[in-house]
Length: 299
Image (cartoon, rainbow, N blue to C red; front, side, top):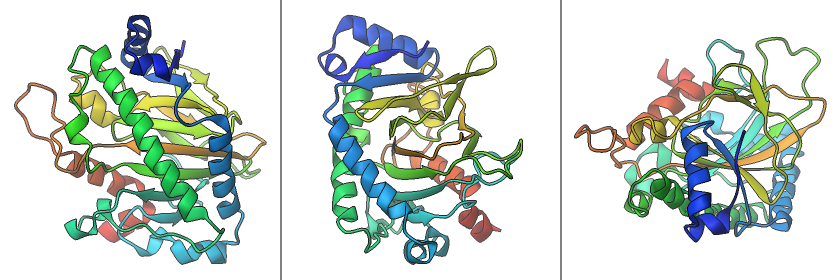
């Protein structure tokens, strides 16, 4: 079962809620949360902005096509990401933006590519990005406390976060799609915590520990939370990164994940191990394996 938790109770350190949070993080690796600072009306507004962008002609979206960059900023056309090397490239479109620190020279902190259309898109998405970071930090503090660490353990590792906000557009599953075609193929997220808002259309499936798949749906104003490879490693396997996928249905679907990842230099080696694993090096390697334009550049 995927726990459904009240975000205000997580912030208030309610013991019963923290225990349910621990069980979800250490068990299925997925949660849903409600009662955050981002309500249903706000989420619908953000989804509408992404919907308007994805409705633009491809020739317009190509003005911010990330294929011409060495970073994960801007529009990704269908087929421009491949999360599973044994599956075909994913047939979704997406738009990525993130924390900017161009003075570092690191692609993971590259300047964002903002489209001129639709009107107000940049303002809406930047404001949502800021507020989603705040919600994610509250949840990560709850995770820290739930697994027995200091509540503020992660705080100083997220002041220049490699946090990537994405808008996903999944069209109806194409008639040509076969067994190796997905909106997004089976994968685990690469980083720490993912805060996923969506329009409530079904499609996301979570792999069960004993095999099989669990559908998980959350409408605007409620968020799906899952955890990535980095946090599983960082917490010595206590928090689980669970495989999931979107196969697609007869309906189009929009989702907005915030991949909440730490500073580039953060040491994400298992706590207390004495080892050093830089978060940015792990994340950069995984991006290079996933984005088709980065695969080509590396080749």
